[in-house]
Image (cartoon, rainbow, N blue to C red; front, side, top):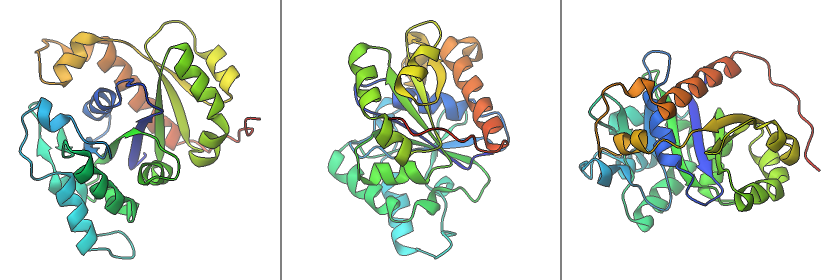
Amino acid sequence: MPRTVALLSLGGAPGVTVTAMALAATWPEEPGALLVEADASGGDIGTWHRMFASPGLTDLAAAVRHDQRPDGAGEGPLEHTQVLEGGLPVCPAPASADRADGAVRLLAQNAASLTAASGHVTVLDLGRLTPRSATAHLAAHADAALLLVRDDLAQLRRLQESARYLFETLPRAWTVIAGGSGSTAEIAATVGLRVWGRMPTDPRSAAFLRGEAGLRRPERRPLLRAAASLSRALVREAATPPVRMEVPR
C-alpha cells in the first residue's frame, strides 16, 4: 500500500483539491487516509468548511522544522489535522500564498515527515506543478503521483510537451483526465505517459465536498465512485512489481 499519494496539475484548474478530497474520503483500507493541503499558492478547504486557522499546514511545518530527525520519525501529519463532518482528517493550508509557500518549502526539506505514523495514507494536494520547486520535490518523493489534466486541446498539448520532464521527474506517476468521455488509450499513446482513466465532471459531488450541499448517497455519485476505483488501483499498483516504460521522445 502506498504511504503517500500526491495530486497535482499543470495548471488550468482541473479540480485537484476536490479530487484529492474524494480520493482520501474513499480510501479502501483501514485506518484510511488523511489529506494534507500542501498547495504553495494557498488553500481552499479551510474557507470552504469554515475551519480554524490551527491546527494546519503551518503547524505541521513548524513541528517538522523543530524536530528534523534523520529517519523522518518526528511528529506526523495526523497531529495537525481537523476532522471534517463525515470523518476525513484534513491538514488545511492557509489561504495566503506567502504563508502557504513557506510551509511547503519547509516540508519539502523533510518529505519523510509526511508519512503518517498512525498508518493512515497521506494524500497530498500539491496544486500546480512548477519545475525545480518545493512542490516538484514533494511529488517526486511520494509513493505515487497523480497528474490531473483537463480534457481540452490546450491542456493535452501542454501534457504532451511536458512528457519527458514528467517521465524523468515522476516515474511512478499516472495521468488522470478530468472530464470528457470515451477511452483514454489514444491520449496515452500520443503523450507516451501512463493514463489511468477519467475523473468525471460531477458538480453535485464537488459541491458536497466543498461543503455547499448535502448528498443522501454520496458513494453512488460518479465522482466518488471513480475516486474509489482509483484508490483501489493505487493499492493494487503498490503490490505489483514496477513496469519498465520507455522514455518519451
